[in-house]
Image (cartoon, rainbow, N blue to C red; front, top):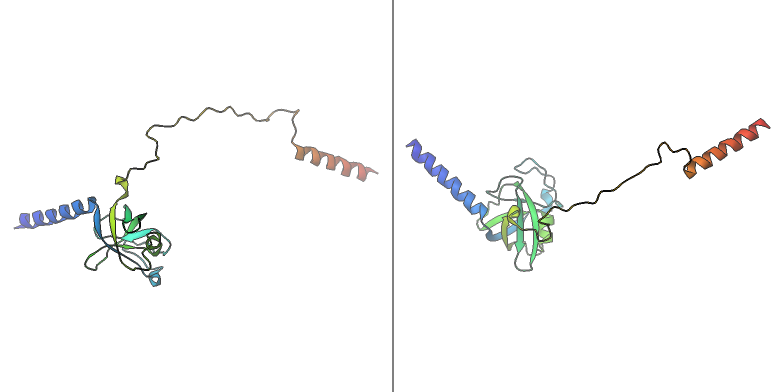
Length: 166
């Protein structure tokens, strides 16, 4: 009996993780600005201008790319909370993330969500860039080179000394 419960729990976890790994399409909503400053499930405080979200199955700290197919906009957010707990919704966004996706006026929009670590960055070089070696010299120890500010200071000291001797 215990092994059957364990197998069922394991299967449930495996299914939720496999669903979380593939891109999801569904409705997104966003936090009201009145919730600004409240603690999220991760313990962090919600800030309306942060690029964060609530998701049911991704671990806290996971970076997600949220794409709005209606206008082609996308944003990368970090999971800091659990939810949404409304049927049909897959993600709750911070106010700033919703603004970046241009869904503030609509309230709810259809989006696609996928892990950001599965995204290929097109401008990231595949090879290591070699930096040139630079030979830098200082004037430490050189008596013949004096900075201008030291010349002005020394001239001022000499002038004050000669005036005080008179």
